[in-house]
Length: 573
Image 1: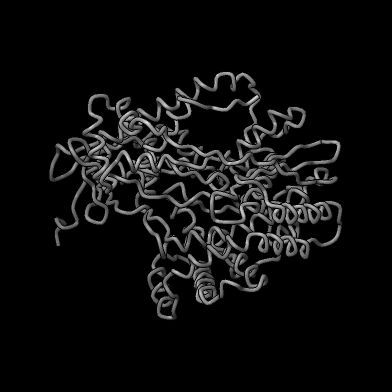
Image 2: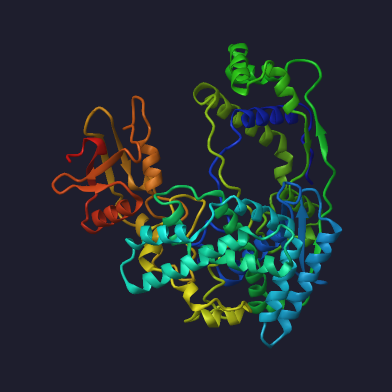
């Protein structure tokens, strides 16, 4: 049975968490769960893959607003007397209207599971319900797209000229033409009223789907080359496309595993009420937490914090920030529900239901240890990073990738063509010009961060980059500035492998080399470039060149190589 954390343990935990947030609200590495496993997730058993995508999609659909109140989680209870139960929790509780609409979706899926005729119309019906339920969130993303640069004929001409140099065969030229035609529709999207008709919003979602499904390489080349972060409006388009993917994911499970829909019903978890937390009226909470962290320097540290926070009284600001309305997160609500109803625990424990009942007997020690860890992090930040903020990453709203959904027939076998795959999933086929993707762009312009991925239409992982770069002897670079040999670093290829796509990341290398001070080489992208090797050095300054270079080194069986950092300004004219 879960026990409540109260008293001094609770106060200590919240105070240090608040301090960490005030120092820098951005922590850890951003994770796009359903999007970040594009290369590996299809290694899962087919039923596990589709169940995960189904539950992720259900959680996405239930988060009807762009706020924390409707963040949701879902679990699947199989082989219950009443059928398969989708148990849904939401941070502030599932509203009656939302519950009614997702139950209607479950009815459609139950009907799809037993039907034998063409499913295309049912997919459109399901997507229409998703768009209606999530119209507030879709409208939010539409507002973000309004802020995009206006796409004019002059813009299209400029992009075509800029990108033509990257093409190497006639099929690439056709793909570029199709991309530019797709991009022209952005001006139509920007002219859409916020209260657009449902059919217009459905067309918007289908249009947005193609951004990652088909045109990710072109978008990267045109708007965020060299590992840059995509602008907000492109992220908004990606987010909109997830609703079309959600419809595919929901339907695919019904097509391939109809036994789960005999019937499938939806039941909510009742959310506990909010709990108000306030710092004790007496004492100085900020001074108290600082005394534990930087003992003996709390007064000076509080003064520094006041300057960073731009307030006169850091103590008062901290106390005010510590006044919180706390609620139980959706995932934790599900865990608590199954603790109280062990007979309903899902066999497919995707939401992280614990089997260790003793964990709650150790809750105080766990919370205290976590508080100590956070205090240590706060100490490091106070000593070395005070006033320095990390850039805010894009949110990682629940959603799933297309892998395992496109290119499969209704039995889960890989199809030769897109047309059959769309017919199997009940999704209208996309016109042929929109499905032409230049192969060299997809492979050369690999994503440089965890926030993006290149959609794959095949479930195969035989040539997974993760396997190819971790199964060889690591390449090691000894890097030094040509104008200051004292500034040097040594970097192994394993230091810069992107955990998502498994490829060496130019962005990660640049971040390491940009370090200055006593250690590091003060690399400045745009001003500096690398010369890799000694006898026949290779000039590297972009992600494409870097990927080609490390592939060349691997093919040449070079494991250790020297790298020099040069300035463009010092190049001979």
